[in-house]
Structure formats: structure tokens, C-alpha cells
Amino acid sequence: MFLFVGLGNPGPKHSGQRHNIGFMAVDEIARRHGFGPFRARFQGLISEGSIAGQQVRLLKPTTFMNESGRSVGEASRFFKMRSGHIYTFYDDLDLKPGKCRVKNGGGAGGHNGLRSMDAHIGKDYWRVRLGIGHPGHKDRVLGYVLKDFAKEEQSSWLPKLLDALADDAGLLVQGEENAFMSRVSHAVFPPPPKQPKPPKPEGDAAAPSHADDTETKRES
Image (tube, rainbow, N blue to C red):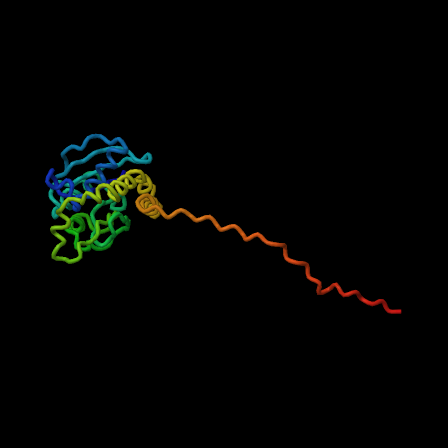
């Protein structure tokens, strides 16, 4: 069994904000894979279903970001989850918008949701980092993450990223984190098409060498 956690803040006021991309990710996974409705449990909202033949539970803590670990800790203890089967989707200021990186363990990097989770379940869980970009100065961070995604973002990289996360979620439960990152990256930022090789220039075939054409004189 696996637990996919989306980090965000509850309520309609926050639903479209950059800080809520984790909620958006698990919502799209639930929709794409036909999960049951979310219901209140473990100080959060939880939904059950399967991905790639594996039982998966999706959790959205409703404790607000800074106390996310309370909800995750309660759910993980109830289900006796191994930390290696917990994947947390969250916003990352240090990644370019639309980028996705997956790693196991590490620091909180200033993210209050991760800091709370580390305190309640330790650090050895999987972190699915979803890039939202940086506003340029630390004093602007709070206003930036608590602001809705710009219309241009909502019509460009954001839907591509959410679609790819849902499409390729099966790779996570199969332990193929590197393949997951590669597939998501190619979906959001398709590589340029390969240019055909230019045809070889047409020309006369190389003239035969006459270096050995000298007749050998017969000895008399």
C-alpha cells in the first residue's frame, strides 16, 4: 500500500494558489485513476483507489500547511505505513516552473509543510518537488506562494504538469522514480524534434589512383 500526500491549505480561498499545487496534483491523480470521493479523516481528506495494481490512498491535510505533519502522522500510524511508501507532492521555489524532481529524504528547504512532516514521521519519505519558480527576493515569497497561478501559467505549463503527474503516477508505485521524472519532464518540456541529417553532396566518384599503373619492364 502507498500513501500519496498533497500539501496545501484548505478552503476555496486557497484552492488556486501556488502553495496548493500539491492538492492540485492529488486531485488530478484521483480523477484520472477513478478514485472514490474524498472523505474527512485523519485531520484531512482521504480517498482510496488503485494505481498500476497497487492500493493507494490520497491524503490532503486540512490542518493548514504549517501543521501538515499532524495529519500525515496520524494516517501513517493507522495504516502502519513504511516511510518508503509515502510520496509527498508540494511546491518548490527553487525549481523552474513546471520542473519536477523526486528524492528520498533530505531537508525541509524552508518549506513549513515538510518541516512539520519531518517532525511527525521523520525524513525518510519521498518528496515530489513541483517547481513554481522564485519571485526574486525572500521578502516577496509569502505573497507569491499565496497568490493564484497567473492565467498564462494556467494555460501553459501547469495543466501539462498535472496531466503528466497523473498519467505517470504508476511509475512511482513501481519504484521507477527516475523514469517518472523523465516522462514528466518530456511531457511538460518536449525536446525539440531531431533534425534530419543533410544529404551527402552528389559528385563524381573518386578517380581511381594511377600510382601503380606504371608497367613493369620485363627482364630479358
